[in-house]
Structure formats: structure tokens, C-alpha cells
Image 1: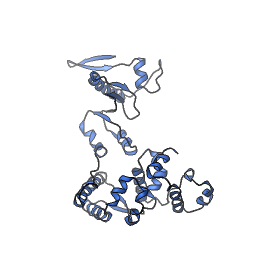
Image 2: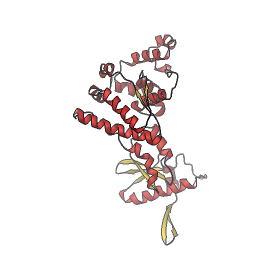
Image 3: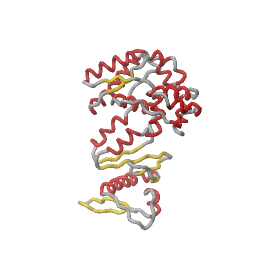
Image 4: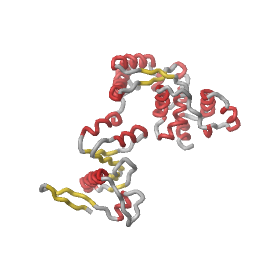
Length: 297
């Protein structure tokens, strides 16, 4: 139900929920019980209902949403997650940092500067490697690295990269996703490495080279499902751990050993050898099938 508070000659709308509405927007709602909210949460909900009031002529429907979102609106067949805040956006930043969130969202805030930390999540790194000349590819790579280094400068963090041998990588193109294989086949890694080193030196950012052994495989098997991140993000996480000088290679998940007859002998190996054996066993699956299966084990 909509109500008004009059202040300084202006009507300020606010809303109360009946049982039916409460069931839709409050997870686990049970009638006849007290709910305690912080003042900040109540004000955020006022902002959410004010937005709903502006969109109700478009037949918007209120729906529940997981934290940190205030709620969600179904509009023209699309589900829009709504995040309302009167302060910083740290909880939303954590969500976007650790989750691969691709749904549409609306952010409502009182001051525009609260949106600034979200810039890095809301823009795509501008890299294009197909259907363009080598000079255009180089320019596109330069622009992409500029975004990455700008982020490193703002956060005062080093950049880690894999010291890859692309001659060996190019021999295994058939095991990769088609779009990644196409990118790699025309990719001059030496150009990337020299360009990255030059830009880091100019910006005063430390550049750390790490051993690339099984970074993708470890990321896929250990971190992708655990943190709800993409295959690329999980590999980057392993690179980051090596940059932080984690001394030991990650343990293999024992239930990912496909050949149970070899389980005991594999567990007696050193960890890099264990990952080598795991990779052999999973080699029979295409990239897409492998990612699908790993997310369901």
C-alpha cells in the first residue's frame, strides 16, 4: 500500500506490505512475526519501491532477488536485478569480483561517485584479434593492456603473467574452444610480452612471470565451481596465487580421477605429476564438454 509523508511542502511516498506482497519480496516470509531491518535497509527499500512506482505503468512486477540486491523487477519479459544504496557499493563489488554475473541490473544511488569503483566491472577490455590486420590487432592489444595497467595503478598491485611457450600451445589448438584456438593461432605472444613489459615499466608496475604449468587445468578442477567463476577467471586465480608465492602446487580433487584403478598410484606421485595424469584422463573430452562436466561433479 502506498502512503505519503508531507515534508517542506512535498509529498514523500512510502509503502507498506501486505501478506501477499511480503511473500514475494521477503524470502522465507511467515505471517505474524516481527522483522528487524536496519534504517539503511529500510531506506534502500524505499528507493526500490520508488523505482517500481515510476515503472508500474509499464506493468512491472516485483520479484525476489539474492543479496546484495534490494529486489528484482520483471519488465517486458526481462528480469532486472535492482541494487539500491545510500552509501558505498562494496558488497556489489564483491559479487562482481567473484561471480560471473551476466544478468541485467539497475543501480540506484544518491551520489554518482559511489558508482566509480564499478567502472572496471562494467566495461569490456577492448581486444579484437579476428577480421583485422596485424597492425589493428597490435593497436587493439595496446588499448586492452592500457585498461589492465590502469586498474593495477589504481589498486597499487603488481601484474602476473604466464611465461608461455606458444610453439607448444599452438600444437594443442584442437583441445581448446574454437574461438580461443582462432585467437591463439594468429597471436604473437612475444609482441604481447614486450608490450606488457614496456607499459608496466612506464607505469611503475611490478611485472611477475610465473610457471604456466597446468594453470588452466588446476583452475578448472579446483576453483571454477567452488567460486562460481568462469574457466578463464579460474586460471587467472591460479596465476595470481603463484604471483603471491604460494609454495606448493594445489592438491588434485580425488573424485576427479576418472581411472579409479590408478588412484592409489596417482596419489603417490608429486603434485605436478598428479596434474599431468589428470590432464591425460580428461583429454578425451572437448573443451566445452569438460567445462560442462566439471560444473556438475
